Structure formats: structure tokens, C-alpha cells
Length: 270
Length: 270
Image 1: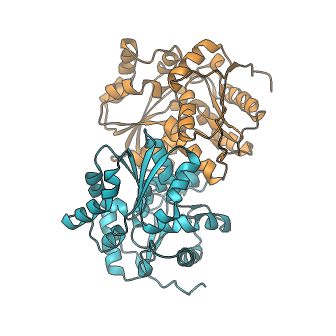
Image 2: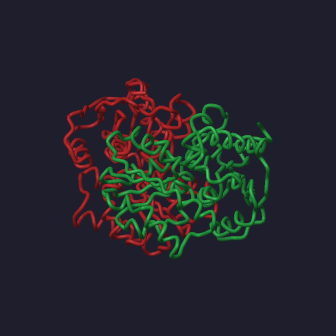
Image 3: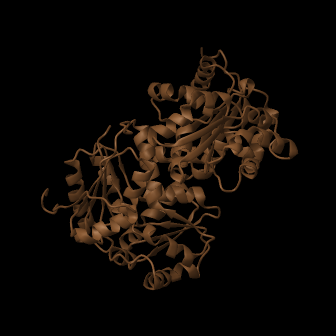
């Protein structure tokens, strides 16, 4: 089972999932595709998100991946069920793992979720949480400024703090939550800033870590873990320009990687 | 999918898994069977453990369970692969979830495992850890006194502290670990004592919490979560006398439950 795990995202946020996959599954090969050209997905229509996601999936299926990880909350919200029923390989998204971890961690059943407009509008986290635990209280908040900020490489400093503080204000004002799900894979990059604003009494759940954990569970359950004793081979593709993509990737991975490629996917497979 | 999740254990330890299943999957029905009559399994031969486990499984299959959780590390070590290949329902053990959580939490790749002689002798944790992360260092220690102590209801106080301190001495003397797996489902009952002896710098992984988490993952992945809005119905069976079983169960669940039954399984199905 030395085929790669395929990872798709609207841009660089999914690299936090890729980083956790490399850490928690160090024997596995990855192929990552970020649709940086058309990022962010958050404000887009469901139909557009579906079309873009299928273009990414078609690109990765050509590479014979053994599992697909939708490392984008917005794409998960709108395409997970469809992809799970149409593909022959296991497909996992980022919403259910984060929801499940929140259920494990919360003591008072008051859970906050921050995400893009698309993710919050879809109600996907509330449904994922309540389908498992009916009486959970969900405080969901769209933070549309976070993704564009992170995609510009702004992840700390005064400007980042100000944006996070203003965005989280409505949640902080009505704050019974003891657990906060980062419902967007870009947000782990500003996790420390979010923690400082929301307070230390709140457990922050990174859907990236939790998704990697569940990818491991599902691969093992299907007897698809890579048993080879080799140095894994990772490939990173971006639909847009490579400079910022590479810069952010290397800051997440804390090492230099020479496997970045620019690629055109739109209209290639439709 | 309102069929129950079946849970088996050599005695009362698996009740910590049942408790976490009830907490993390509050819509699911459980049927628990503890083989208290023949507990502990730790010092027994592989053949005996296999035979006893199959007797428990046969009992639960009659109840048309939708998933089997082997809530006993020793039984997991010796029967998981066989049960996964022979049963038509998903089967999960307690070893892989604990191993996976340790890989997620450790920063220095030095992981400790405590368990029964049987579990430690089987080398199952080391194999589970290294099959995912080849370069992990595992410090495994058998603590044969813990299960008999817990089965007698001794879970705190001077005697418990003394037994834990003496048992953990070899691990504490050579302690580079930053993560310790409680590789026996009885041990969460003495988690606080273990934490106080091993030190606060060590993250303790309860395989009970982690197994419930993975049961949730696998059920959802197979679209088998119970969607009914009902009060779940749990049943608890013990092969031995009920008094201590009920007492320990109620201290774990922190509530009184009237669904305890004594049952004979041995030779009934062989």
C-alpha cells in the first residue's frame, strides 16, 4: 500500500493537515493540491465549490491515490457525502474529526466553531455535532477576514491580533463555551493569537491534527497503512503562483522542500 | 442502525470504555459482557484467552450487535486480527487507538506503556506504535498487581499508592518518556495515582477514551451511527457474581443502573 494519500485544499490552509499527516503517519507518501488560484472558497456558491473540488479530485485520481483527504472545511461541507458515495477509495473530510474531538473534550456541552462564511452558512459543524450528541450547544461564527490574511502570510503581530480580536468579539461577549473548533484549516496558523484572545479556559481543537488522526484510523482499519521502510516522497501542487505557496509551506513544515509544482486544472477535466 | 455496540472485557476494566462510549456516543445502545468469573486474563495462555474471548463474542453475536469493541488489551493483543477477519461487523480493539493517540501527543518519540504481563509479553503496543512510526522508542512495563487490586475495588489511598509506586519504579528510574499509555482498561481507575507518581510532565493516554473516539470514527465512516431520538438502552452482563461488578460499575458511571445481569457463557457455545 505505498500509493499516496491525496490531499486537496482551496489554498495553503490544508498544508496544516499535510503537516500533521507527515507527523502522525511518517511512512505515508502525500500528494497535495492547493487551488491557490481560486482561493478563498468561503464566499463562493455551492455549485462553484463543487465544480472546483471535482477538478482537484480528478487531478489526484490520475495519480492513483489510495485515500482522499478533503483538507478544506468549505469543500468538506459541500462535497463530502457526494465524494464518499462516488469514489472507490476512502474519503475523509475535516469537519467530522473536529466535531468528534470537541465532543470528547467538552465538559459543559457548549462548543464554539469559527470558520469561513461558506462553512458556517452550511451548518455542517452543528449537524455533525448534533448528529452524535443531540443536546450540544453550538456557537458558530464566520470570520471572513482570517483566510485572506493568512494567505498573505500575516500570521502574527499587531495587525493579526487586531483582526482576530475584532472578529471574535461576538463570541467572547456571549462566552459559555469551553471548547472551540478551528473550523478552517488556515486557522491553526493563528492558533496562538486565537487562544490569547478567547482565553486559556477554552480548549482549542485543530481540525488538522484530528483529521490526520482519523486518516490513520481509517487506513489501519482498511489494512492500507504503508509498511515500506523507505523515505516517503511528498509532492505539492498549486494552481496559482508558487512563491507565497512555497513560503507558507516551508514556514508550516519548518523545513525546505523542493517538490513544489505549479499546475493547471481548471477545464482540463470538465 | 439502532442495534447495540457490543463490548467485551475480562472483567470490570472495560467499563471505562463503556463509560466513554456512553459519553462520546450518547445515542448508541450498549451491551457489555465482563468475564469476571475468569478474570484476570493477563497471566493466561494465548489459547485460553482465545477460547474465552470467542465464548464472549458468540454470546454477543446472538444479540445482533452492529460493532464489537474488544475493551481488554490482553484479548485485543491475542484475538483482534482473527476476529476482524472472521466477523462480518466492524471489530475494534483498545491497542491501536491508544498507540495512535500517543503518536499524536509525543514530542520526543519516547513512549511508555504499562499493561498486564500478557499484553506486554505480546509486544502488541510496540508493534502498533512502530508499524506507524518506525523510530519511536517504547518503554514497556508489566504491572501485574494493578488488575487484581482494582477488581477488589481498591483504587485510591495509601495501599494503592504504594502498589503503583513500587510497580512503576523501573520506568521512573529510566524516564525519558513524555507520554505514557495506560495499556489496560482497568488503569484509568487509578490514573490520578499513576500521574502523581510518574510526574506531571508525562501525558497519560487512556486507551478507553481513545477507543470510544475511534468507535465513533468507524461507525460514522460506515454510516452506522444511530440517528434515533430515544433514550438509549444499555445492558451489562457479568459471568461472575454481581455485587462487586455493580459496585465498580456505578462508581465509574457515577450513577445507579438497574440493568445488570449474571450470565453463564462457558461451554454454552463450544
